[in-house]
Length: 429
Image 1 (cartoon, one colour):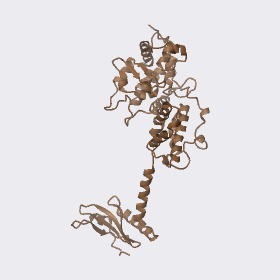
Image 2 (tube, rainbow, N blue to C red):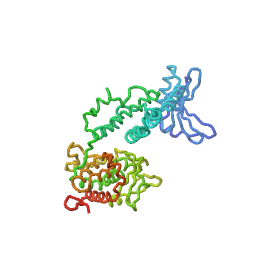
Image 3 (cartoon, rainbow, N blue to C red):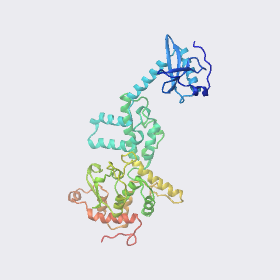
Image 4 (cartoon, rainbow, N blue to C red):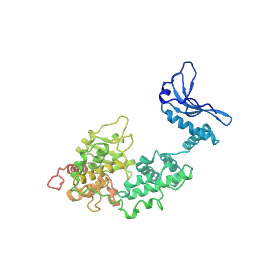
C-alpha cells in the first residue's frame, strides 16, 4: 500500500510548479493513496492514480487539471480503488467501454442513411420510378428534417409522433402514408441488425393509442381554405412577416401553385423580364411542364429577394436546402393564432371551421374565379395545373392560354392586395 502523503489544499495544488528538466514530474497530493498531479515541462497538468492491479503497476489517468478539480480527482481515485478491490482493472474496463462505443458507432445507422438503404432494398417492389420518387419525396420533406440525423436505434414513438402530429389533422392521407413509410424504413433497419425492439412507427397497439384514426379525421382532399372575404386581410398580414417562409407562402398565394412547386423553385426557372416561371415536368404532380405567368406583384416580390451565392433555390432553408412544407404551414398557423390573440376570428375554412392551410389557397383562388369573376373555369383549371378530365377536350387543347391567364393572375393579385374592380366582379376586357 503506498504511503499516505500529506493532504494538499486546492491552493497548494495551484502553486505546484515543474522543477525543470525534460521529463514529466509527479506530485503526491494526498487524500487518496497513490493520487498524483502530473506536470509536463511545458506546464500541462493532469491527475494520475498510481496503483497495483493484480500483478501490474498501473498509472491510471483521471483527467486534466483544472477541468477536474482536486476534490473531483480524489472522488475518481476512490472509485478506481474500489473497483480494483473487487477485481476490476479500471484501465481494461475503460478500453472495453471505448471499443464497445466504437463498435456501436460503426453499427449505428442514421435514419437518412437507412432511408437510402431501405429504398434500394425495395427497388424491385416499386411499380415504377415515380412510385419510388414519391417515397423519397415524402420522407425527405416530412421525416428527414426531424429524424434524418438520429440513429435508427434511438428513434422512439415520441420522435415519430413529433413528425406526424402537425400533419395528422390537415393532411391526414399524407401523414398516414408517411407513417407507413417510416415504419417500413425502421422495419428494414431492425431486420438488417441496426436496431432492435418494437417498431416505434407501428400503428396497432402503439400510435393508434395516441392519434385519432385517419377515417375519423377530415379527408385530405378538403384542405381548409381562406374565405374570399378573409383573403385580402390575410394577405396584408402575411406581407408584414419576414423570412423566406413568409415570402414563399406569398408567392404560392399569388401564383396558385402547390407548396412543393414553390419550395423547389429555382432562379433558372424564372425569367423576370418576361414575367414567366416555367416549372419543369419533373417537379409537377402531373409530370408535365407548367408555365406560370407572373403578375407585377409576383415579379416585385421576386426582385426584392436576396440571392445566396452558389444556391440556385429561390427560397433556401437556413441550412441551404429546400424549405420544409411545415415551414409554410407553421407560418399560416402562427398568423391564425396571432389574429385570434388580437381579438380577431382568425383565418378559418367556412365549412370545416378549421384554420386555413397553404394548399387551401388554391381552393380560394378557384372560388374567386367562380364567384367574383367571369373568367372561364377551364382557364382556372389550367392555372392550377389540374388534369383535364374530358378526354376529347384534352386531345384538342394544345396551348395553355398563357396570355389570357396573365390578365387573370394580375387580377387575382390585385384582389389579394385589396384592389377591387367594378365592385366585386373582374370583367374580361
